[in-house]
Length: 184
Image (cartoon, rainbow, N blue to C red; front, side, top):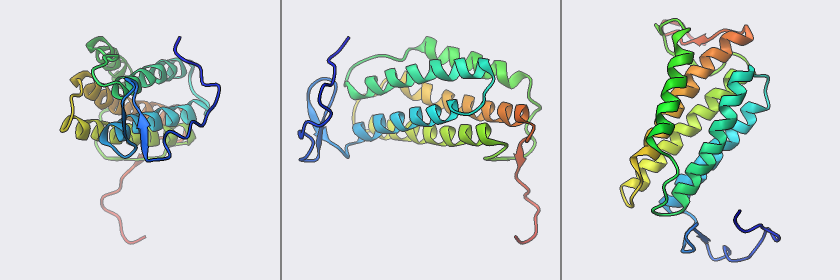
């Protein structure tokens, strides 16, 4: 196990820099810090989702994903580190296919909503999408393993499907976008 924090504040970041996992320092607004910070934010959104009523299988899946997102944050925080692998992306795809198989085909766009758990899942999905964009931005300047970006892409897709599952399971149903509506 790594170092334990006995003191939360160190004052080393008061100059606008932060330490990376390899010991180097970088600006707190660098593309790398933004990328792993948004992954952390996505993980917090999953924590909020886990505070809602969920089917046990979804709860177990999201808990496992939280651990992987923590690993992914570490990968982005330590230049050259590898924590997410092709098998992790494959597992997400398998879960995505499993949950999507029982859903009716999409004929309309879905608005975020459909009950508390589904709405929280949609928030998590959008933050994961932003984490993906931030990782892509980082990859334009520094090396980012493609598995990290693919993982975030599949995870946002999985969260979309899970939001549909949760909306249906709650009895609220999916909120469909009405493209032919009259004024508000």
